[in-house]
Length: 98
Image (cartoon, rainbow, N blue to C red; front, side, top):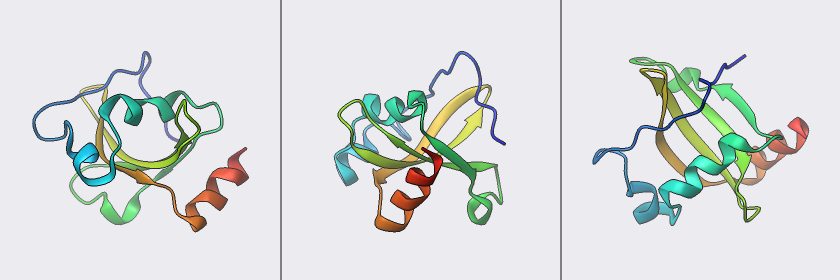
């Protein structure tokens, strides 16, 4: 089970700000919205957790866009690593959480 810091705060810097907009047209603010989705599903990303623990969040934005957010927690803040639209297999995972 993943425990998110409370209150949820986000870490954005030159290394992760705007890169999801450039690649997937998901703005930083929209990346934050699924963390507050009551139906979100979070699982550990074991395959990519070699240097730091990473997680996958399957959730919905305020405009009902289904996305996958890869993130880590650093210094009690959520740091988004990447965000993109959900695929069919991931949509099933999200819908099972609902």
